[in-house]
Image 1 (cartoon, rainbow, N blue to C red):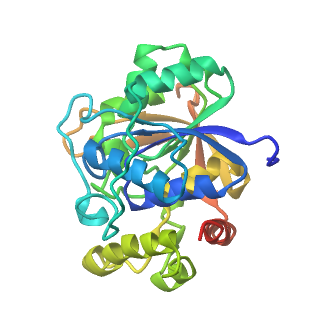
Image 2: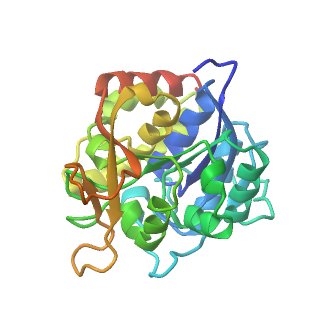
Length: 316
């Protein structure tokens, strides 16, 4: 994609350490024109995810990008969070200045509808948190499903175990009813699931070039990762930080870094042990419903991790 024709993109997010890295990747990439950020309850409560989005944009000198606060809770279920992974307020040990800007007046679902309707066929949505905002938006204005360029989702576990239960990945499990609506809304969907995101991870040593003490962004990255590598990773027996959300963000403008397969995917809502499971029909049969998702099935691990490190280094 030419830097003269950037991809117009809105990031729906719940920052979150890997969400923060995805946001920074968008800001570092000339292929992307970030038109807005919408926030949702997920890794931490909405108040924190919204503050984090505003503070990160301020840190990068991009307070011109609007932030719209979204859903504070799932459609039906009680909220769940992942502070043990991301820290109490979502960004590990990073202590960013209190943002001086505020969210726009529209709630995220209205913001998404207005922006998509204003530029039919031009906007890509990248959703890296629970899908509550997207479900509310497509219920509010169903025709946006035909007006959006593409929706790219980080979520699900197709041929691998989940990361919140044996069956389910966090973003889908956090609001399975919203995910069900989004998967069946009829818009062009790409899904970047744990099948590929768990293949792209970096050790703390590999992150070192980004953790430059002389850079404000470098100090922020270091402080975010310090919580993960020193508090969470030893308990979980992890030696790498998985780049879940940055991979989904990159898939929007460099889809050639991954391999894709058209599949039908549904979301389990009623199972006692399996709520939020993403059930993928890879083996086509006459009775199988038509494919509704382009699912990532493989990734160029070295190519993506090299790309990620090179891009974020531009911001330091």
